Image 1 (cartoon, rainbow, N blue to C red):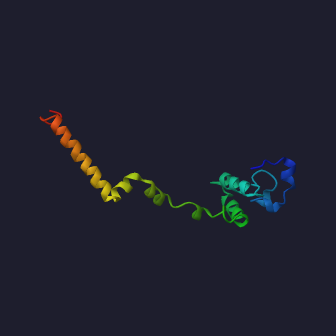
Image 2: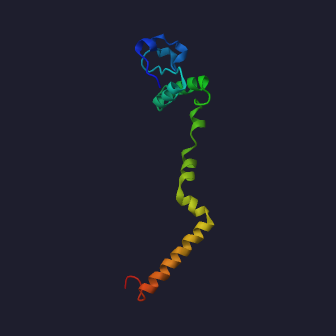
Image 3: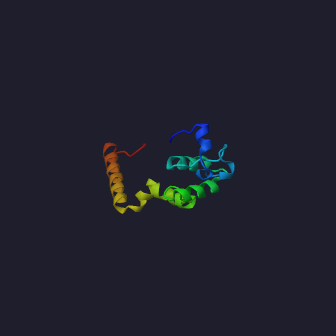
Length: 119
């Protein structure tokens, strides 16, 4: 992302800002290129102007400016997909392999300690 001098920023047209009413001042989020558009999306996250910035970036760069609902899957669904414990539970072959390993470990422990564990 190229940095603008104050003169360059002042020479940008108002259409190059996500919040043209504040242009070229602070909080106007310049979006003359894709790099600045991504930066604007990141900086506006959680702020009152986020909807304006999202809409402006989406209009100018449809591929990167998708509305937030389309950009991020719901947190619950994303957490389920990434949870290795749930993945292991869903795989019967993996469950059988783990059960076999537990039995082998128990048999080995019984051979090494015939009086029982912890006695």
